[in-house]
Image (cartoon, rainbow, N blue to C red; front, top):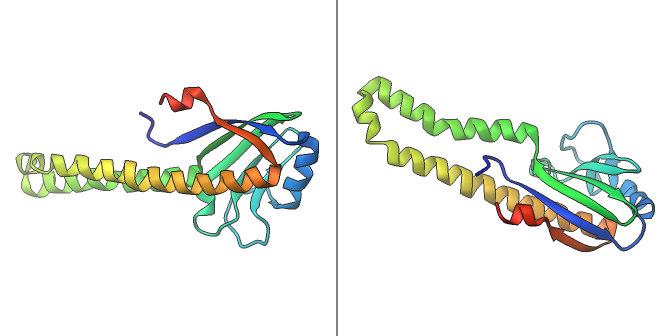
Length: 165
């Protein structure tokens, strides 16, 4: 099991990537930093002739997922992963139950802290599978849907290796 989710897709474009990249550039606020900022464009990030590295322009939640892709002609691979800054924030959030366990062990003794182990595990599972997984799922779906429309993707399939995980 991976701590932070990610997805990989194979994509087939309706036209050549050189044509689709022009539309993507028109809908992207070109910048070197992947930081949320108000803009009228759909994405922020980097776009070149071989691929892209983008975040959604939605302030607050758009930067959770980084969309990166590499294309040759009409075929390509798109990867969706959690932004590194959000990995750090989610790691801090995941450490809270462990910190609580340590405080209980220090104040009330290790035996008393062992009684809270089931609560600790439930807290970790809720943070990982409810908070992180659901936020990644919904935000990545929004980003992929926007990208599908802008690039005119006619066939998008999740990689089989990812489906088995």
